Image 1 (cartoon, rainbow, N blue to C red):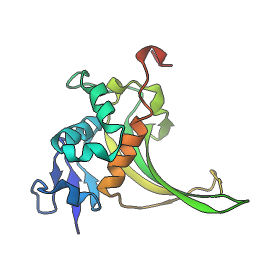
Image 2: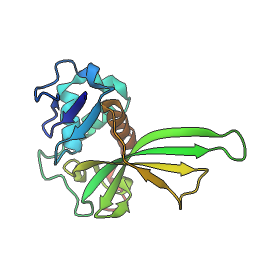
Image 3: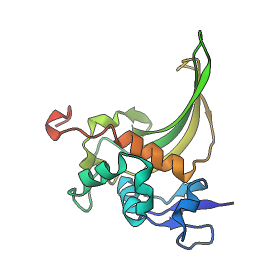
Image 4: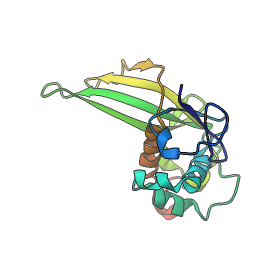
Length: 178
């Protein structure tokens, strides 16, 4: 079924259980995450497969920012996990209707959403990441959001994580949470 597992150590594992030999060929395929997959795992994947680094301009700066973080224990008590969510929004009424499709990462403490921008990068590296449902919003109705099971491609996963953390880069002294 052309499904790739993203391992905690940064490896891409094929359906047959082997390391993927052609990582770019996996970009359109569906992904699953090994239990405990984290931002650190994502960064290890970017190091192991440098061919992915040019996919998003935020990847290399993210790698540089996290390079000086401790090798383990980079977790906040304020988050239980992060969840990648695919959002489909129908917008433009009145006016020209259109669809926006994007993947974004949210922080959670149990079932309560937390703003990731309130956390320093060194408190996010070892927080587990999960794959969430597709959320469909019609004409800005944020009350009646429909949710559906969905698959994520490797490209969507890389883009969603990199895009979200492109907005996490701020000096430590600017943090609301000290």
